[in-house]
Image (cartoon, rainbow, N blue to C red):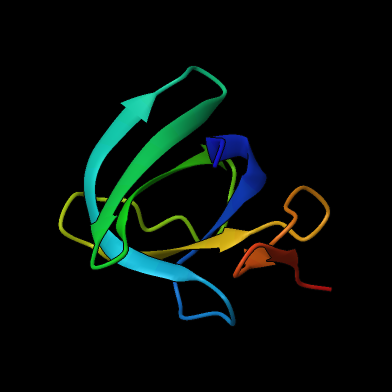
Length: 80
């Protein structure tokens, strides 16, 4: 999933992938945050002015799929 199709959350959210922040890369007007969790690795683009961005390495965070950008499938069928 593309990093810009995920939203960053500092607290658990429905459908979110949890993980520990391992890398924070400065992209000038945003940050690319890498999360490592049981489900694998996820990267999230976080706006510099995001209020809930507690993105220090070692922090637990959540990557929430943006419903306007993701089409979820289960067992080969689109889930609506």
